Image 1 (cartoon, rainbow over the protein chains, first blue to last red):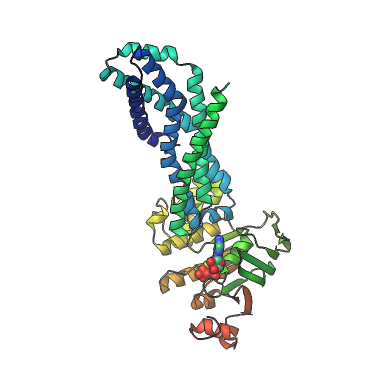
Image 2: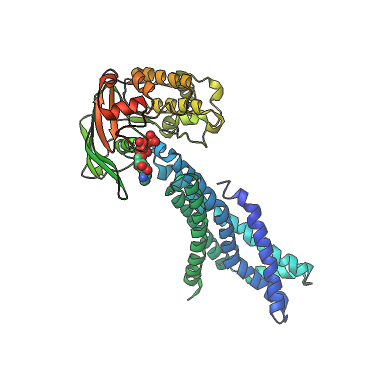
Length: 212
Length: 245
Ligand SMILES: Nc1ncnc2c1ncn2[C@@H]1O[C@H](COP(=O)(O)OP(=O)(O)OP(=O)(O)O)[C@@H](O)[C@H]1O
Ligand SMILES: [Mg+2]
């Protein structure tokens, strides 16, 4: 829990902050700068809460957490610790896998709430510091524009990404064999498969939530 | 106690066990010897249900636990296992390792802790180690902790996979003595895998030799000295020339 949540917070925050900032710049310079204050704040808010917060946060956490889970369970597998669990009548699924998946499903949305706030702050920071927007108007626009649905859809996505991240780590770790090299392979596979699945499932979920 | 009939185990298309027959009497200490890669660990893992054989029958205490390619659940018989590498849980402290079974079964933490100290004492470890992690102990100490963990479940049967490998001769002898004593204390039937002939002579009531996936010789510590079976003669004398290549 603490590993997935708390220790991922700094890197997720940084990612989100810079993404919010970059998004603000792109919209400002890419648009015709007409009424840009309202457009920048609303698109940053939407982009971050619906897509970029959960997806980038998910991928960053996949890099940290899927790999760590795969390495840990992979090492347990190749050093026979998983066999040892079974001989002590503990079920490896409920002992090792279930708690990790549960903490992924719970911690990812919490982490993404922070990512959303910090990403919007990134946009606000660039907007006020370099694009000359009025800070309180920016916030007001964001608050007026965002709907509960924008945030909740992002958090549902985040929860599903938490599932993908942890289950890929567990799956690859559990099925690793062949010593240290096998563990290394499991680690890489976990990150790659989790990242691809996050992007693919994100597309499907966006389609489900918004295309109607 | 344990009866194995015509057990086969393949990996992909590699035959590892090729019709093993083995009979182990209750209360005895049996040893399986054999070269590296002959399938000794695989055999034990099949009996434990960690690997699924392709063919054959396994019965424990007259209960058929494996037949027709399937295991049947039988939770009445407890089997302890000392793994080749110790297999201690490296994220848990020593006492949590030793009392793992009891902790999992909801026993009071304080009792588990005290129990761990007792079990560690039985294998000659002081209570200074209880709060350490496995990686902070030497290989020999880890083997002892693993032994303490295996006996903590009070097993009816206990398997030892190369308990003395990687230990100096004195530590190896200590482990041998512990195995004999502890197994006797808890009244368990034991099966030990080893390439260490002095260990085999010390702890065995019966010796079985595995070669190319079959038991090719059975006897005891006296008959093994007088046998003219060329495989056994080569193995116990450690000769590079002979039928085993
Ligand atoms: N999970 C597995 N997948 C594929 N092959 C395996 C697996 N486990 C064991 N083998 C193969 O089965 C053979 C027997 O392995 P096993 O570990 O039983 O040997 P062993 O007799 O215990 O040897 P050692 O004395 O060196 O421990 C080896 O050739 C090994 O490559
Ligand atoms: Mg072995």
